[in-house]
Image (tube, rainbow, N blue to C red; front, side, top):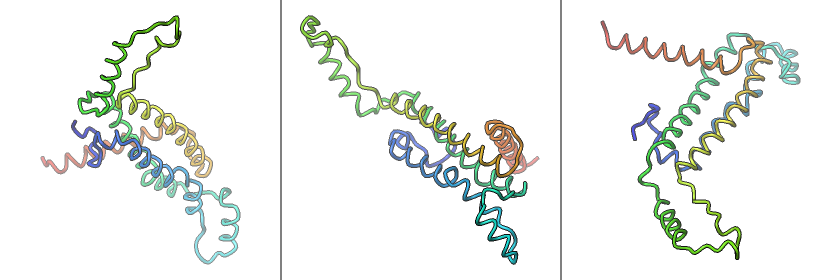
Length: 201
């Protein structure tokens, strides 16, 4: 399968190694979203020399106003790139989950279980539950379920992070979805502009 995301470290193996996928998402969230309050507090400290202001900022970090330029820099250089990276990973793994998987190591076990089930004589009078059969999920099905779960988690995490950003930065009341879309539009525009310059007249 081709690398649809454009990120070289991605591969079907990465997606199917669900521990690696979940570790990447967990560390990314921990580095940016889970520490959002501390990161923003680091932008509020006043200039050196104003000892009283420094002590006040350290005692009441959440009450300090952050100038708009610092907020924009944090959003565009730290927050949104982190979100974009996680979105790219989940989008890529969703494509993997929806693609044929002839190398699924569990396919032989499922085939054996299905064959055994077909050969098994069922007598519901003796066991009313014996007719119930729940085939083992394929690894693409497991991956698709995981991607859905992680996307739901992303919604919650981003909503929480964006609420903190709006509160501390006194930014516009637009949703994080709109703000992220605006960032991605600008990102794509910059990529196109750079490609145009590199290709020449």
